[in-house]
Image 1 (cartoon, helix red, strand yellow):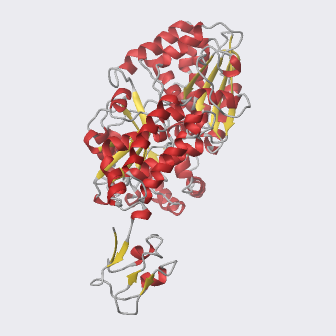
Image 2 (tube, helix red, strand yellow; image 1 turned 180 degrees about the vertical axis):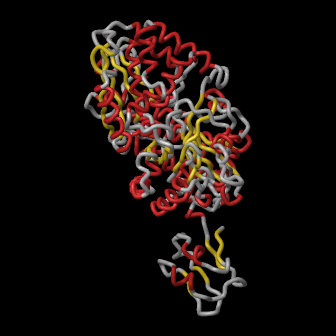
Image 3 (cartoon, rainbow, N blue to C red; image 1 turned 120 degrees about the horizontal axis):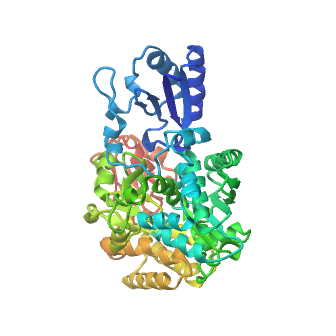
Amino acid sequence: MYRSHVLICGGTGCSSSNSQLIIDEMEKEIAAAGLTDEVKVVKTGCFGLCALGPIMIIYPEGSFYSEVKPSDAHEIVQEHLLKGRIVKRLLYQETVQEGNNVKSLNETNFYAKQHRVALRNCGVINPENIDEYIAVDGYAALGKVLTEMTPQQVIDEILASGLRGRGGAGFPTGRKWSFAAVNEADQKYVCCNADEGDPGAFMDRSILEGDPHVVLEAMAIAGYAIGASQGYIYVRAEYPIAVHRLQIAIKQAREYGLLGKDIFGTGFNFDIDLRLGAGAFVCGEETALMTSIEGHRGEPRPRPPFPALKGLFQKPTILNNVETYANVPQIILKGAEWFASMGTEKSKGTKVFALGGKINNTGLVEVPMGTTLREIIEEIGGGIPNGKKFKAAQTGGPSGGCIPAEHLDVPIDYDNLIAIGSMMGSGGLIVMDEDTCMVDIAKFFLEFTVDESCGKCTPCRVGTKRMYEILDKITRGEATMEDLDKLEELCYYVKNNALCGLGQTAPNPILSTLRYFRDEYIAHIQDKTCPAGVCKHLMKYTIDPDKCKGCTLCARNCPVGAISGTVKKPHVIDGSKCIKCGACMEKCRFGAISKK
């Protein structure tokens, strides 16, 4: 028995900040202090509060150390682990209390309103140790369905829970499984979409890095429910940590007899293999993903037939994303009523969001469906940095829309988001402040979609390109109101005629920003100004002669020699040469330079 456990985040975010070096230093210092038999270092997945990484939590005290450096290891071991004195300078400030006590993480603003189901083991167990997963009821749900439930009972339980797909469309998971179950075939497949491609999204990656076995267990349960014997996890190659831990998890599960032949001695056979994606966003669409697994170019196929009838290798197939699967074992163990008690009438359970952008607490959060945007941004997220005002939040990535401040108190669920012109998507939530240009945001997401279009259908291949060109004209101040009408018309044409979800949802960022921020489009077109001061072609840098001291710092830092003047005399900017890089404004010590 160890008297202390030191949990250190080994997710991508903290790993990029040298958390592995911290682990190595802690183990070295623990050994030097003679504490090897008393203190265990555990590399975990993501704790969620990525803005404060690398993160370390020491139990049983529950001390939450943030922004830890390898050089802090000696002090933590000597003071905390040897002498029992918490190192307060490293504590997450919200947990600091008088004396040698710390506030529980669940009492802090970031964690208080969260309810972890899909993320329940992330930051809790070592994802590379199957025994730790088993110790927290891992594979108990699989054992239950194989020994106590019929396939139909499993499907009925998932149906009763109200679980909907967390990949974006929100289709009822139980219905999808039931469609595949009734189709007779000599072979069926279970697929997992881990090809998370939305800019700013890292929900699925974090689950795979922190709790890979939960996905394997859920896929085996799904295989039993529909009569499949083979599963595939399609994961992007840009997730090396997730891929590595999945490989370890699959190997361990096979060694323990939890994947492969005759699982639990019931005669049920099920195995899982990995397939690495090359990062094509279109492969998040189910038929394109299956086409890629088959070894072909990732392009969507017309539907019907749907994958439940003819999917992977033309056999009945179900496809769910990582977060959807992460809920399944808990539904089986705790019951459909438990899961359905959370959330709203039509959107049950919880939802994981990757919180990013102009927000203080960047990170991963899981909240009950129906939680308002205001609660997520102001309470959990800690509000907007630098006293700026909230302007909009983008949900659903390139397929979603922008939600303005007037809808901050709308409960977030599938139907409410669609009603206000956005969508749940896989869970990316990018916050924007008053300095964000909404026309530029629409252009950014559309540029991404243009690059990621597979080109198979004309509405997407050509239509998105034409929409981007019009947006580019608007941001350059070269468009007319006729262009704006043409843009809107194109949006609806592409939305109604594209082959797959990528093209059908590509216009959403434009339509939502037109709906709520049309005045910004008009300002770009008619007034030739960018209200947020973002679009370079509509910007103008000027020097206030009353504030300029003639220090020459701006002129010396201008990369194109657009600033002229003599020492101790006001300088001027030549607008014809200026490239609007902002270097002069950044270097000015007297606030003499402004942009309009």
